[in-house]
Length: 362
Image (cartoon, rainbow, N blue to C red; front, side):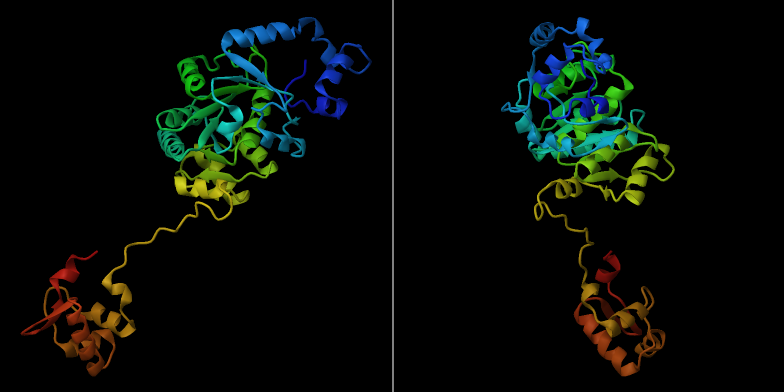
């Protein structure tokens, strides 16, 4: 009867239970025409039978399987003419929806992605899956499909949130992928079996992806992109948004760079970055990368200046090294002896030069 996330529904039926709404629609009261026109075509028993034949079920608030975190949509406002908590969810697969979503991350991005984006999505999804994180995406071409496949290739699992019925394969060429997801993870939709996707249904679907997960990772997105809509919902739900950087010459990375520059998205370059952002405070902390320590790092200022002045191949007397280093001769002589003990320089008959060991060091 009601389109997913319809703001008119939220306003008209505020504080009414689904059963009260159903009874009210049957009264044909004035102002309900936009919904009551569907009454002759609605058959709940038929929908439930279709779901049963497809191996699906209907989950509602209060069920053991209901993911309570999506109730945040009650206070998340509206975006792109969509909003609100769903009245129920159609679920296909043998796994428990609430359990799978307890540790989960949304991975979304461009349909027409580059090979770089596809590779990044698959690699990150696989690694997150190995950490026990469920990958949630929308089942579309490009980044969505790569994320699902990456999760399936790991020890983790994945959930596809659809803008159509769970018995409808859209896009059709992803049918085999949907079968694998249903077999190892879950297919989820706000729409009953048999429903086809529309633009507004995709936008409504995005709010579920964002609200159901601990954070959203955007991998390649143009400036006008459904992935940015999902990121917006994640922001409104108080979830972290992460963006994977791409080449500055890539049109498909303009949206991700915008998220980082203008909307305070976290730069994500590794699984560690993602786990730190979606985990409770203090867990999975990321350490910044450092180059390996070298013997040079511990040298004081005079030792460094002296070492920099020592030639590589042709020996030089200490007086010449002192001139190049800009230090007095006594200081340089003392530094050269210290550097020799550290096997950084060596002395030959005609003067000093770098040791073989130091010349080979990075």
